[in-house]
Amino acid sequence: MFDQAIKNLRNATEGSIQLQQDLFKKWVGLWTPPAASPEAFSPTNLQKKWMEIVGELIKKHRETLEAQFGAGLKNNE
Image 1 (cartoon, rainbow, N blue to C red):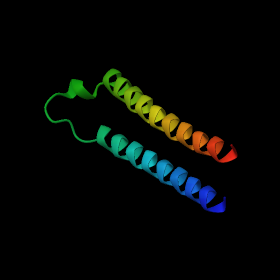
Image 2: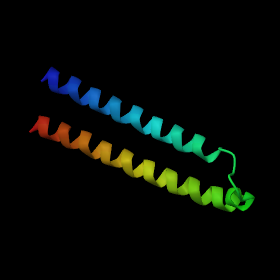
Image 3: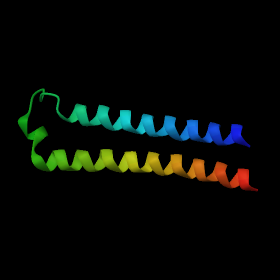
Image 4: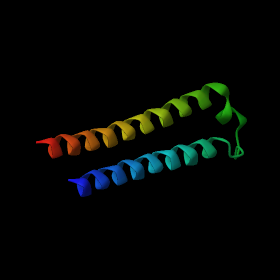
């Protein structure tokens, strides 16, 4: 029982760290210097790109949480 709880905690921690790393990489990627066109970094384009990134991360986080809750429910049964 404790082994399973520790395993679930480890999986949750690894998932959280992975999400944070993905967020950081994408956030840093937004601030790289523009290659050719300054309009690529207009406020509207940055907002759209940021919303896409946040949407992806929320989906990944939801999938991780669903897996964790599923494992918890399976342990309770």
